[in-house]
Image (cartoon, rainbow, N blue to C red; front, side):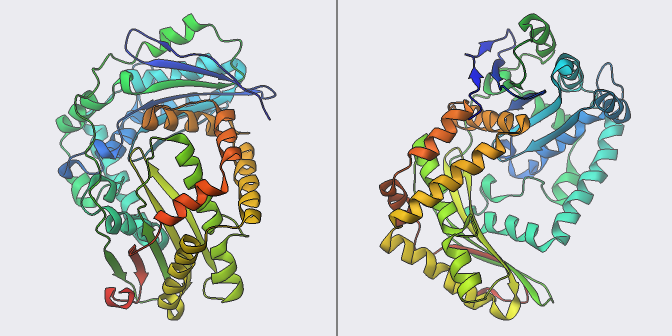
Length: 419
């Protein structure tokens, strides 16, 4: 194990907590800045605004006047830079060789703390985001993933696309986008994460850069809790020979409890998260119903969607849907075997260890744990939680994943076929 050293966070005058996670044996370092400003904070007419704002800040800062200047500066650092928007948070990160982390933080805080959010740049980026939305609709698998959210959560923000729609993004007013930033980009509800070979960093140098982020009071209202489950069936008809199927379950588990989250992760892995999982064995290997099948757990701060997915020949889609639901019901009724639990525990924890070989992945994990769950950011603690999950804990989750699920499908079908 990499044995990271995690220091207690320190809070800056702008309300931003700073976490340092030193990882031995790496020459890389990552700085990531996150805010509790994901798409859950949007009103219905703001759908996609959090993601749009993520794009906008890359248009320039005080010292780097436009996107080209930002990109060239990153290349001169030998950096890998990116951002992501989820339902819960937005995060920006840059990874470099360790000795250049201060320079990387200078670049990142320039356009995050002092962005040039001009109206002209906004119009240019609006077209880019609308093209991104159109590309998603052209990809049946991605579209099916958005449809299952809507089938599971309805019109709640968790049921809407993080990207928004062509109509919503096309209607954004420049002042409204700025107001969304001012209302949600609060350091008090976010965090800065320094990960990797960071033992040499001087706090005063990093803090001076992070203080560029303005002090914004935390939002007074929490996101709306998800509604009670009312699973729907949504089909996007496509004249094709291939179908993309999604099945979604919302078990009533306490996602604020980190051991429960670990048990949910192992349940989803056992169900369909590996080549030795139940879904792969039954649907692909034994019955030959799908060329691609699996399951994942999509977690929010107060809910989880266990999503089963399959890509398959359209003539086998309805049969596969029934068979996949049968696998879920059998697991709920019988529970997992001790051998399954031992195997999936080792697989899930091992996969986490391998993923944490990337300082970027460690930083993203820490941001999610702190911003979405107010939880422990230590990567070793996350691995230990997976190692500690018991058979009884997985059985407890399995008993709650049953009943009528939400269904979404892109292909030559009608909703009635999945009733």
